[in-house]
Each structure stands twice: as structure tokens, then as C-alpha cells.
Amino acid sequence: MCSEHVPVMPKEVIENLRIRPDGAYVDATIGAGGHAEAILERLGPEGILIGIDWDGDAVELASKRLARYRGQIIVCRGNFVDLAAILGGVGIERADGVLFDLGISSLQLSGAQRGFSFQLDGPLDMRMDSRLKQNAETVVNRTPPQELARLLRRYGEERRAKRIAGAIEFHRQRGPIRTTKQLADIVSGAVGASPRARIHPATRTFLALRIAVNDELANVDKGLRAAVKSLKGGGRICAISFHSLEDRAVKKVLADFARGCTCPPELPVCACGRKPLLRLVPKKPLVPSADEVARNPRSRSARMRVAERTEEVF
Image (cartoon, rainbow, N blue to C red):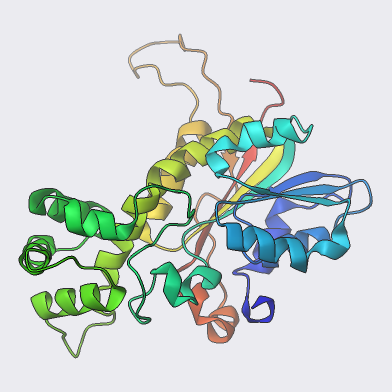
């Protein structure tokens, strides 16, 4: 599995994190360990990397893959919203850089039993952390149709949300919807398949359910805010997103911290005293090169935003 994993935008990640051999870095979504390995290759004996992941399978895989870096890496199973506590637990107050590679990993997509892919028939699960109580089957079978339609519109930006929710309600009255194939077929039957469509009819429905099950957008917001507060002065955040909702969430948090005075424009002098805690570098997101997209099609929708901490103390 490791050999199949290709990290997205690795060159850009390393360049923008500006790895110092003696620095302390965080891979907040370690996955199969591709980005982590690239960081570790540039650390010296005094450097350390903290790898975090919700997914127990990812933690096990990354730990095995990176075992040769014993003494330079600590891999933790946890949610990156708890970044400050995780760092404190291993004796690190501030980090020199934090990486977020958001969304779903190739590791999670490759197994039918995880229920993330409509291309593989498996249970409707979609939990990034198997310890979560609610899975996709629960959401699909127990959410009222009106609320389900709202969820599909909000998290999947699905224009046909009401029609899909109605079809789900019709089928679940005849028995629980338990598998990815069942759900994909229901959605396809409800909206039809256009020969001109660039994506499968169920793509947005599966995205919306995955975001809802894992509370992904709220976690992105909390995790990035925790990272800003855990950075040293001059430390950097690199956040890679794969769809517009993720990118908007990242953009909003970084912009909030990059904004200075919030006083009304009619005030002659600043009364709030607010100073920017981040500097955006660059202001627009980075995208993968054409060569990378050709080698790794998964990277085509990637956007990476980078920000640098402007102060040591806040």
C-alpha cells in the first residue's frame, strides 16, 4: 500500500515549510506518510516530526513506513483540532511548521469496507475514525428528508438535493439502505446520468455524507486556528484542500488571522489594537504543475494555501 501512495504537491510543501534540520514540524494528516517522509529526509538528529491522524489504519501504516526514523518522529492517533494538547503531551510548546493535507486519502478510498467510494460495493460507513458513533448508514436512514436535502445542498453543493432526498426516503421505507452500491444506484436513478457529465451522479451525495459524518468543515476551522496558536514566530502553515468547501474554509481562517485593524473606517485612529498574526505567502493558492497532474491525476483539484506566523507571542 505504501508504494501506491503518492503525496500531492510534495515539492511545494517542502519549499514552503522551509524545513530547518533542527526544527519541530507537524503533519496533521499523516495518512500513509508520504509528506512525512519528505520532511523527515530533511531533518537532522535534533529535528522532530509529530504525525497525527484520526484513522487507526493510517497510524499503523505510517508508523511502519517511517520506523527507520525512530527518535525523530512521534505518530499519534487523534484529531488535529486537539493539536495544542497533542504537542503539549510530547513536550513541544510551539512548532516551526504545520501541514494539513485535507479530505480523504487514497488509503481510505482503496478499501471497500470503509464505504467512502461508490465505485466499490461496501458498507455505508465513511468514518475517518472508526470510534465515531455515527456513520453514513445512520445519516442516510434516520435523517428526515428535508434535513437530508439541506445537508446535500450545504456540503455537496448538490442542486438536485430535494429529488435525491425524496428518492432515499422512498427506498428506505421499504428497507434500510446499507451499502454504497445501493445508495449510488438510488442517486443515479433519481437524477439520471448525462453523457456530458464530468462526474458520477452520486459524487456530490457521497461528498456531503462524508463531510457530515466526520464534521470536516468545523474540524478544518478548529484545526487551523489551533495551528496558528501553536506556531513559532516565522513558522508556517501549509494547507492542501481538494474541493471548494474545504478551500473556502481554509481561506477564511487564514484571512481572519491575516487581518489587522477591524475598526470602522470613519475612526481617525485604530482603537482595537488588533495586529495580523499571519502573513499570506503567496496571497493566492498554489496549484500542482501540469507534470504532476499527468503523473498523479488525484492532484488535479488540489489547492495549497500558505501562511506565516508574524509574531512570537500573542
